[in-house]
Length: 438
Ligand SMILES: Cc1ncc(COP(=O)(O)O)c(C=O)c1O
Image 1 (cartoon, rainbow, N blue to C red):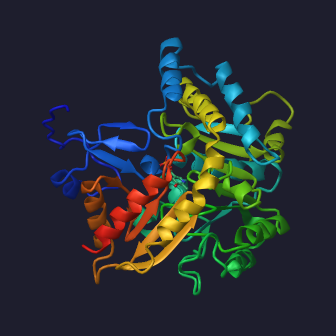
Image 2 (cartoon, rainbow, N blue to C red; image 1 turned 90 degrees about the horizontal axis):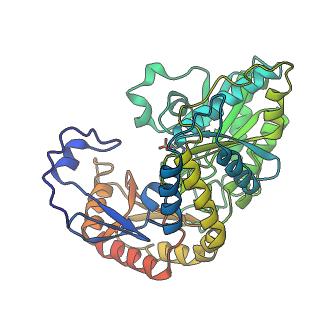
Image 3 (cartoon, protein in one colour; image 1 turned 135 degrees about the horizontal axis):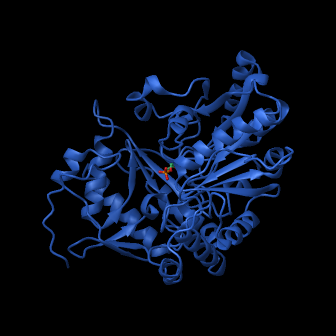
C-alpha cells in the first residue's frame, strides 16, 4: 500500500463533477486481469473494461512486454514522409479483421480523432469524386461520437452540446434515436419493433435533397447514451437507403469493435457493411491511446487515382501510428486471436444475458437490454433528480468492490472479454443487493 497525501486541486477531471469527486474520490492504482485495486489494496471487479476498452483484461503480460520492448527499441517515429515498418504490418493484420472491401486504415489516437477523421475523409471524398455539393452530415439523437467539434455536431447528447452550441459545424441533421420504442423493454438481443425509424432518413433526404448529403454516421449500438439497441433490420435499412442515394455510411465502432459483440466488428455481427468504420479503445485493449479509421477500397482509390505525386489527404496527427501504440496494438491483436477472445465473448453472451435479465423485477428496474458482452440495466429516475440514483449506485458499488458505468440512471456493463461466470454472478448479486438500498 502506498501512502498518498493528495491535494487533488490541479487535475481538472474529465466528464466528472470535480467538486463531488474531490470530496469523495474513487481511486484505483493498479490492475490485473478482471480487477482494479485501490490505493488501500481493495479489489474492485471491473465490469466495464475500464471505459469500454480493456477487452483483453488488465496487465496482460504479452502486451506489457511488447510495450516495454518497443519503448527501449524506438520511442517515436514520424509518419509524415517517414514511416515505421511495424505500422504497415499492423495495418495488414487489422484489415484482415474488417469486412471484405474495407481494406485501408488511417491511424489516430482516440475515438474522437477517429470520428473527426472519418467525417473529414467523407467530405473530402465527395469533393474528390466531383460531388462537392455533398456537404451535409447526418448523425442521430443520443449518438456519442466523442468530443471534437465534428463529433459533438453529429452527436446527439444534449449536455455534450449545450456549452458549445454556437460553434457546432453547420449542415448537420439527426435521425431519431431508437430508445423507448413501445414493446421493446426487456428485449433479449435486438428488439423487435422500430425498423421504420430508419425511414426517417428518407424524410431528411427529401428535405435537403440527397445530392447535398455526404454521409450518415451512427453507432451500431449506441453505447455512451446507455446501450441503445438498433431494432431488428434497422441498420440494414439505413444501408439500403444510403445505397439508393449514393451516400456514405459510417459505423462508429469505438465500443462495438474488437470482439465486444462476439464478432470482430458489429458490421459482421449484424451483417451490414458500412463504407467507413471508426475505432479506438479495444484496438489496443486500452493500454496505449490509439484510434483507427477503416475505409473501403473505393474511397481510398478515389484519393489515389489523381495524377501526380501530391499529398492526397491534408490530415494526420504527430502521433498517428505511434510506435508504442503500434506495438500495443500488434500484441493485443495476437492475444485476441491466440486466446480466441471474440469467440469467448460470443460463448459468454448467454451467461451475461441471463445475469442481467435476472434483475428484472428488482426495485427501480424499468428496462434491461443486451447484445454480446454489452448491456444495460435502466433504473427509474428519482423524481426531479435525474442521474442521482445512478450516481448513488456508482458510489455504493465501488464501496462494495465493483466498477460499473452509469449514464444518467442507466447502468452499463461491458466487461473484459475474459469474464467468467463467477464474475457475472458477483456483479449481479452486488447490484441486486444494492438496488434494495436506493
Ligand atoms: C462510439 C464512440 N465514439 C467515439 C468515442 C470517443 O472516444 P475517445 O474518448 O477515445 O475520444 C467514444 C467514447 O466512448 C465512443 O463510445
